[in-house]
Image (cartoon, rainbow, N blue to C red; front, side):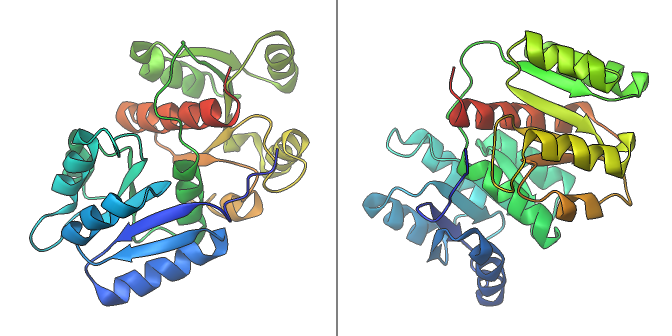
Length: 259
């Protein structure tokens, strides 16, 4: 299945004129229609007339801020299922406030263009919420990574099936219904490229959503695999980020391949 965003519609809410232009330019390669609102009041008026596939909103704006806008969107039955991402500088307090307000995610304005596009692509295909308990396949040669991710996800009810090598992963994928796959980039660039390209032969094709675990210095892999992976996590892993990103990946999986 190839994902085409040419019919997708994004509402971008940003009060700064220069930043609106920058963000619009960064979204252009996706091919989606982008509508602009200069403040939260304009955004609410827009939603009375249109139903976008995604709302990207600045967090800090004069008057009504992005957090209050998000709360109002979530409180209205007409709009509450629209994926909503807060655009932030990834300040810890803003991350927490974004989630408390009901945002699905937060995306740094300072992120590299590739990382920004990967996160927006994910948001454009989110299902409203997960139904039955999902299954996550995890491929890492590190017992520490396997144990840590399983421990972080245990409270969520997500079933994690871990593999330490390629044969174990193949057995998991052949004998169980995995909704998504997490792959550790420390397996080596050549091995990662071979594995991901085997699962997703063409950029934009999807048969199993993939999240890549990378370390500092491995960011170039995002460019190499753009269009073949759906999200990424940067190590060291933390429970809050692991749960957020994996839950979003599984919602994406439910949207693309509903059971």
